[in-house]
Length: 256
Length: 163
Image (tube, rainbow over all chains, first blue to last red; front, side, top):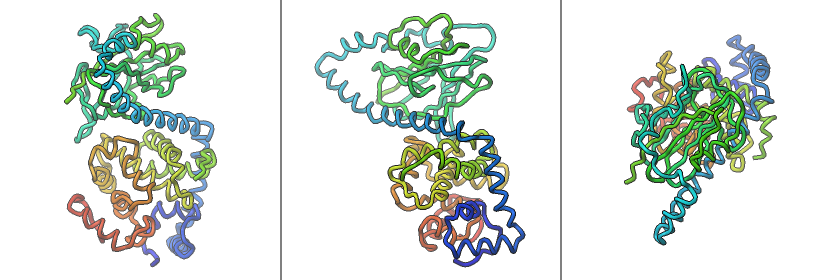
């Protein structure tokens, strides 16, 4: 490879430091660094490495990577399973059983009454925890109002305002009674919230083909609680414990 | 590819973060993207080639950041930044981004298919690698890289250089 005349790009500098470049190219780049008096750039990488690992240590980063990986796998599994579930539901419907099963197993899997789609279901003084639903568009994204019409395939991004609350769970239920956890993405303790400002969940998601509606709930508290309490509330319709505050938002799904 | 995530992060995490910082220019977003780069590696570890982990991670970081840039609402800070936004907007089929963080492009990458044109464009126009260096990085011929870049000229109005 011909030797380069200009400054060594950061990309190649990183590859050089990692020892991954062919010998001839590596020698050429080292000569280039020497000629331009920039040999210290390699040493600066080592210094930067130490600074970054001190600020973002393995013990802090790796568990978060593993958590996200597990969540991503789970979301992938949900996407894979849902179409199969839809087919089985269609077969069940043909057999005339679907309404009975839906009512028995998922008493809340019906469109909420008009008064239930108001943005806040429990009023508190001052700033309140809230969800903001954004839909990806060609131009960027748009904020969705309560009861907005959405479609299969829409990519939604959830943002939340914790309003000072310490713990939270964001979940949704569709008309089939399928509950999806968005925060945290796996069952267990409620997530520790970023308590100030509007925060974006790390992953957007795509609406599947379930008909009717998608109902979101953001449950918060100053004390730890479990995702199971929220899932139970969504499925049963039972009231939440008094210590928990809920914000609900329903989007109406238009099916072709 | 067996992945010991702790040792991989320790050896290459800072490099990934520097890459994300360079492309996203916001510390919080760069840190967030860095995590997702390793998530993509873990998710696809069974199909990865471990011979050049730095190259793989830099490539993955570039794709993750390009996808972030597509939805980032900030004004470009300089011509290089503006070029990145243009490149990020290329190949705008929404489906490419829906299925995962890096979407179809990463699928192609990890399946050993031809490298994405967006990466080639970033390496040449933003990182300032020569055509020969880009070709070596992505495993293509120089003429192949030149051909890919030529097709971009109509869609990248700010393009300058040797393509």
